[in-house]
Image (cartoon, rainbow, N blue to C red; front, side, top):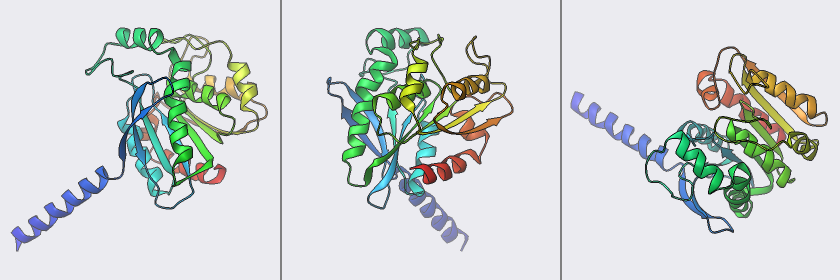
Length: 260
């Protein structure tokens, strides 16, 4: 009896594992410039459903965002996570921060290069997919991904909303430099929806000591945007916010269901 129960439990665990694996499709997408990159697509069950493009931080830590994407899928929101760590397959292993930064800036064109290539190709895929409503697409970014997302919102005015986890705006960074056009991007953002999430002790750039101050600066230059914000105590940064505050993914999903 005990052995039968153990076999049944093992079978259920294996089924659960493979079901989780099947939740996403690993895609190789190609930009108009011929750049190939990996993306993970989580397809909603219902046709004509909204979609979210997820842009990780500098080193492309994808796993926390994949967990979030699985929650989006269960809520019937299509989700895609871009993996831009390998940068045109220039490396098959882990790179140092210095090497990654050099390749990111010199060979990929920095954040603007990501928008022109990976982000453009990913959004093209989403808009053309049979399960996606092409007029209901939003963007989620973590730290560096927030700046890439802000650039993308300016480039693609049909994108409905942006979620910024540990927002970044036009200031020098350790890994790369944003351009100085944050105010121009804010003007292009217009009346669209924005959700800002930051920690009160998350150290940021010198001009903005914490993520909360950086968020408040964005609010000050986005008078027309429809903004919701949520600040947490502590030092949680970027994707760690999704883990350290278990209610946050559900709050984001509820917000997306309203604005998309």
